Image (cartoon, rainbow, N blue to C red; front, side):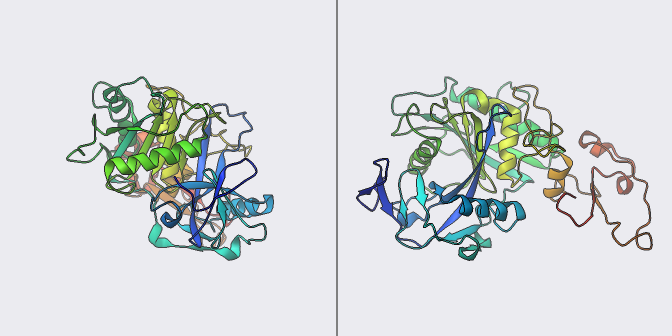
Length: 380
């Protein structure tokens, strides 16, 4: 990618300067291999305007900003004032960027320079047919995961003999309301196996960062398909042979968006697949009562099951509530609000059922899967 500038940053990388005034803020959530790792697992990035990327869409740069600016972005995200993929940042024209970062002016106020563009809504559909494309990535030196496209397809979509996979688990958790489809129907001519394409990038995996590699894949994939992303797909998964620079992550995904990236064998671990798609569904990580990330082991958005055939777990109650009850309609979710006192709230006796028992209920009205006790605080 040729940048529109010829000066350099402190690392000797060529700097470009934005022609546009805005970018879309996207949040990358990294899944730590070791839950005790102090790795930063939430990265704020800009999806750059195509005018700054030689007409290419879907390319990102990590936001390089002051600690106060980044803290404000995090606070806005946690409070719901920043919605990944929908909130636009007015950074102004002429802002410097290189092949990894966009460098925000030190005095740029975050809250005053963001706005929400609902036309950019990327929240993934969680019912109906979901076409997904997976990409086997080959680097400039031929480094690629050893699995054939046919095996990759089986591990993700169950097209041969794999019994527990992304398709089967999302179907099970949604009780058949979400049907993952391998690619498009009819298949795109570029598919080398059901739902799988191969892309050779111009950079090597051994010496480049995850952001540079991800952008290289996005560029080549759009050239191969002949359209922007996600195009006819709802989600697109990038499968890398491994990670060699700033590793510690098994996979990462963009919140409320279409893309997830996997390194090594993590692409075929069902728990990791469902976890990353959860981020695409706008779900955050799940912490336990101690408030630490990954300590909730009751659902896939905590530390997932790092295995292939033992990934039979769904999302927890809070995530199911956030999904809007789409997977458990017919009184599957219930709100209780006792804040008005005994005069407006009569005690109720409910028999809650687990996700696996949802379709066997005998009294749906009084047998919800998820109950929210409204107290008016952020930890309801």
